Length: 391
Image (tube, rainbow, N blue to C red; front, side, top):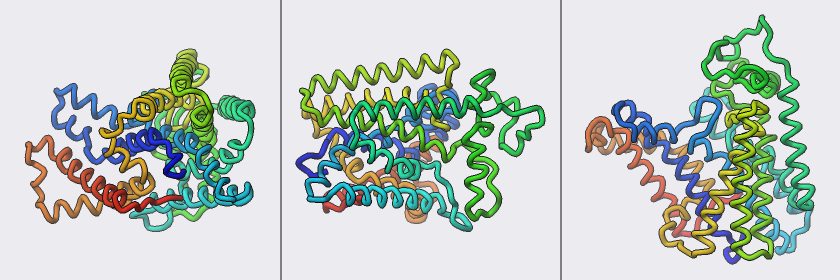
């Protein structure tokens, strides 16, 4: 997007979710362990971690928000590219290139400290990269086709899981990295979406073993899967629909009403599908219910940032988030690739006990805060020097 057409609220929203990701270094969980009687730190710790299986925490909304925003800005990006006298073919080739870079970057970052290339496709960048070409093509179709594609995608993915057979009496749970009596296992019909016994897990047992590995792939410890890129595409389509609304000629207040209505609808549908046992709300395998539920939150968050930034024009407070949001790929790489180096450097130069400034329970908080400040200072330097990493 050009600076004239840039959607500032999208940058601020993206900066917010990237800050949540980078703030993992604060390790609220360690503070909560050191202060077990504090409900305050227990609350923060819960929302700085992923739920074990069914449900949602604030931390679980990072990846869907990042994916959703890819769809939000796509109509602006396409308009910008087409006005630069680039035809559809050139624009699509760029989309394919962008997709490949995202996938390779995801693999590269996940391969750090490994003995060899670690081929994995469940991380945020790779998931977006796998679905991006399809999203790009849909952006040139009518809104009816976009909505129809979303419905077909979600229903088809739900049906594929529902038809996949449940584990039989001879199933080896140990080889799947779980136990038969794991407390988060679902029962009845919803057992089709249990951890490492589902369709997407079975696919990865074949697909990931095509690539060279230190040892054969059996399961992902968190239950994450490659095929989640399909429903993740659904999340990006929701973002594309939001982007269409933003680029429409409707007045700002009407756009805001649409976002709130779609947000409430998404949350309502997600809760109903989960409660009725039709499809559980599981982020780790990106169930269709999760697409709707998290998409509802994404619409509401976009509504908030659009209202306060683009409608009310209250932007001064958000400078820190803008610095992060306008360089989100750089922020992702800094946190993922430089975190260990920065952490060790702080200890080397400031001493082992420098972070005990406020007492031992807050050691991880002080150390993480110093790391987070360094992350932001790097991003601020890039911002002030107009250096932006774009794919």
